[in-house]
Length: 344
Image 1 (spheres, rainbow, N blue to C red):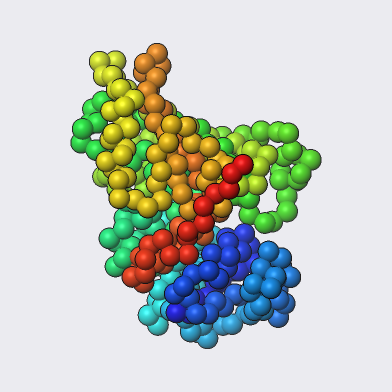
Image 2: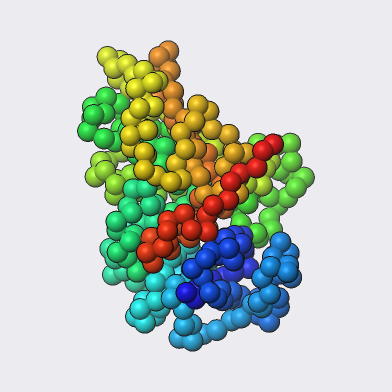
């Protein structure tokens, strides 16, 4: 099969290349870049030297002839490209936010006018653990945000009927910490080494754009309205997200840790990339497509504590995109995603 990566010079494009060069079903990868057209891919992504020898190209959209296209473009750009690809029967996995949200929410959050809202209902939300069947039958998949993936996978098992009325749906708190690669490859003072090293930096503390996406994804799955309070903090590491999720239960309800673990084990028993652990550590998921989840109950604070950890560039972006491609194309779901984290 032949795939094209539109915007292959950034971090998500780099990770897609790294994963796809080891994918047994991929015959050819076409990397595009306006800035680096004609230059070897390995001159930008030096980890691919002597592994992937292609040069960046910059074809017109009508010239792209691939089975699958990954759009790694800034928000607002994918919606200009994707309709022309879909018209020619090309499957598309969009890494931007252009097809993740309802039109009104998208335009409010991203301050952009959506140019093809008719496609929003046709796009499958690309979280395989919750929407696998829709992904399999779709030709357009909206890859979720990285913070969203870790949060939604942590919260979803608590939205079953057995928890109805047992906790406050308007008081779910997600305390998220992320490595610096989540902000992309662009230079900024906020990400300057001297500003990040030996520092923890909360940012967009009450209005991060992934908060509406967390709520939207959970409602899409459960048809339940809820409110999430979300605060991200930048950590002085390159990769990884760790979420501490606090769900406050009613006074008369108690939950034993062992019973909570059983619920999560049953919910995720057939999921190849979900691992339940006592306490998840970022290092165990770095460079992998796994999401590690830990669950506890705090009797004193009357809260369920869910901890989730992912690699923001893999399960939070490019690895999940490959997982979605595998489902769309009928490949083995773990194909190209067999990397295990290192230790120590």
